[in-house]
Amino acid sequence: MKEIRTESGKRTTSLLMVMVMAVSVFGAGAAAFADETADVIYINGNIYTVDDSFSKASVIATQSGRIVYVGNDLGEAEAYVTGHTKLVDLEGKTVIPGLIDSHLHILMSGDNANTIWPWRVSKADALQMVADEADRFREQGKWLVGMGWNQEAPGWLPDGATLWPSAAELDAAVSDIPVVLKRQCGHTYWVNTKAMEESGLDLSTPEKIAEINASLGEGGEIATDESGNVLVFVRDATELIKIPPLTYDESLAALYALQDECFSYGVTSVMDAGISKEVADMFAEEYEKGDLKLRIYGELAVNKTIYDDKDAFGDIVNSFKIDENGIYSLRAIKLLLDGSLGSGSAAMMENYSDAEEKGYPRFTDEELHEVMKAGVEAGFQISAHAIGDASNRQYINTFEAVLQELGLDAANHDLRPRIEHFQIVDVDDIDKAVGLGIIPSMQFIHAASDIEMAGKRVGPRIAGGYAWKRIIDQGGIIANGTDAPVEAVNPYEGLYAGVTKNNHKTGLGPESYDGYTDETAALWNEQVLSREDALRGYTIWGAFAQYEEGVKGSLEVGKLADFVVIDRDYMTISEDDIRHITAVATVVGGEVVYGDLPYLAVDR
Image (cartoon, rainbow, N blue to C red; front, top):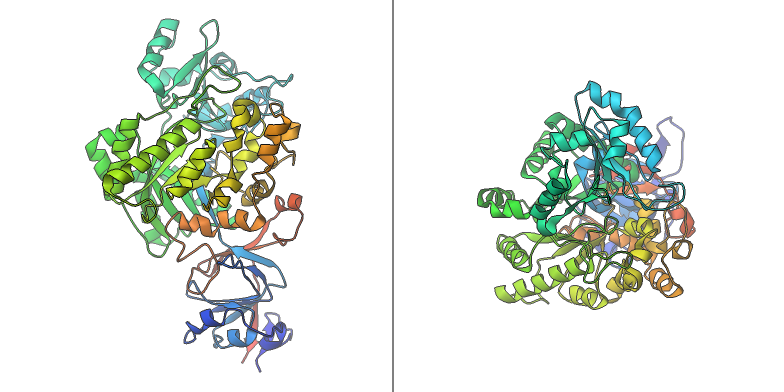
């Protein structure tokens, strides 16, 4: 019988006696790998495998970055022990699969060196932050860029009213260098006059502003006050502001900063929602070097300009990449169909409940059909940003028409189309989307933040808003993410939002916010998820949405040894406690990349 010693030499118990369990529940899976050995065996864990049965286990054995055994029988696990096997006593701690953030923006999220974060602060505090940070950017000869303000956030103005900020206010804070503050959603920019000038814009008269707005058509608007003074670049006119791109070195720094942050939470895979070919090439180079360990699934950004440029679209098509090992794939294209709810630019079928406007679609039906069909024929998964009920219906109906034109059966295709956000959707369209095999790639955390304004923005249409439970009840799945830097990378706030739909900072439900009736508050509250389904959204469903359910998303034999040890039991703690979970250690491909898991030495 083998004897285990800690690294300090203290004698403990034998492997077979550390934890006594009568029967293995994973015997068949273990037998398939009976001729393998383990480099590490993790024992005494409270392990949620998120397999088809949501089984629990207490032991995991790994070899060369893969799982070779999962179960509850130490006798079977001992068969994998060799002279090189290390042991880790999890001491009853909870283990879940490595989390998959199914929608974020890597470089934007990681670029802390070149970005300030006036995150949901008051307008006065945002202006003060700009003034305080100006010298740093001035000395480096850079634009001052920030992100995170929200005119709907409590405290934006002392009296609680909402108001778009003006260029004149930013000019008063800093006028000699360009300043761009992105709204939390990223679809509205608050800029100073210097940023306009550096972008080649002359907005000195109402006529010139009107001329630019006319050129944007359905694509956006520069907002002004009653006197014609520029307020913010709203409704997706942000491309008019020419922020200098990050340098290669700055991009690398952002990439690795985001990797470190993800690992600190137990996020082991991410989907980058809209990258360029150049950024995709940079990721590939870093994987070749062996320094990049965060698993990335990329959606290549395709807007109308890129699609109209056949050479540019050809470059995108040539970037197509499937990695059967689930490490780095580029097999999706992402289209942008509308704006955001908070900016009033999400495309709605009827006016917003609090404004005489419907938002703005970015593609005509004909344009969307053409690019969607071309993407399918090129072998891509088709993904699209769609938040309003009009843009979601446009995607759903167009995808159905493309299937019919290509002679594909909605019940049997494996195209796995995605709608990113799927936020406000007509109830009948939800059912239709699930029937067509469309995967809602949603962000539980968006509901937690949007609760402050969603009720007054869409009123009774909230019945199809953030309707997670309806999607699941219809037989669909949800790939969950954060949309970072729109929201924080922290996945546990998202899991909390998934099972409560409450604000993740205050813990308050819709009854505490303006714009909800008893009826709409009830509609909001009924769409929460079970803890199992919320976790599936962060693991196996996210993997399926990336064609990678065979290699990640659950802790099963043959899959990647990606998992996170957390400090409390997600399935049994109080709902409120979920948002306070922290990661103890993160394992990627069998390697501890965050935290510490002390090994036990075995005398043989």
